[in-house]
Amino acid sequence: MTHKKILVINPNTSADMTATIAAAAQAAAQCDTHVDVITNTAGPRSIEGFFDEVLSTASLLEILIREEHNYDAFIIACFSAHPAVIAGKEAISKPVIGIFESSCLLACLLGSRFGIVTTSARWEPLLDEGVRQIGLESRCAGVISSGLSVLDLDEKSAQEVEDMLLQASRKIVQEKGAEVLCLGCAGMAGLSEKLTCQLHIPVVDPVASAVKMAEALVYQNLTTSKTGAYRPVDPRETIGLSPVLAGVYEGRSC
Picture 1 (cartoon, rainbow, N blue to C red):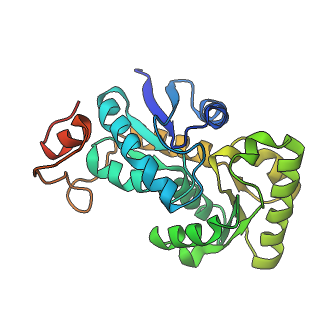
Picture 2 (tube, rainbow, N blue to C red; picture 1 turned 90 degrees about the vertical axis):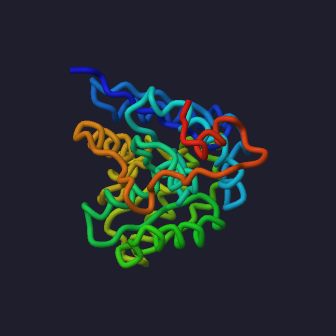
């Protein structure tokens, strides 16, 4: 059997976080799946809000377009309703998966209500809105901040990170009735088993869930529908775009 290839892209520019994502992604992949993990080529070191997401999108789209014919599926490793996921589905024909949506969908298979443990409090309203966008508001018990920043996940001790996540997790389970938890940042990848043992409920790893969902699509030869919202971009003139992005409007790919 020919090996299938998946490209995981860290949308921020932190090499340390890319290493964390790579370890989780490669551990989750089956033996006949080849997984590459790369860092975005431009943007902030961490993504902490809407502005950061938008700044990171153009370079992410360029990577997707350039690499479309080299991989069978793509994963954007940001736990949010990242605009590059939606735009990527429109720009290329291969599956483009975000770790946010894949985690939430998987959580819905494991319990009637899921909760999200995120980093800073700034993410609580952003992820509330993201849950509404993907139509799972009725299944979500809530979003809770751990008090950690994105960069804290690499810079604080492993024990301190685990303790802060555990404290927030217990609160959303006890106060909001979450039956399943989603770890709400790519930098939390690899921590789900420890938290599952402590909490005695399923805890979904954001990177692993996306890898397994990408494999499911690839091995069933399923691709993004191009008949509705994600139909190809209509040709038109552009000004000031890179050749890669301009090519989408000209009906050509790299």
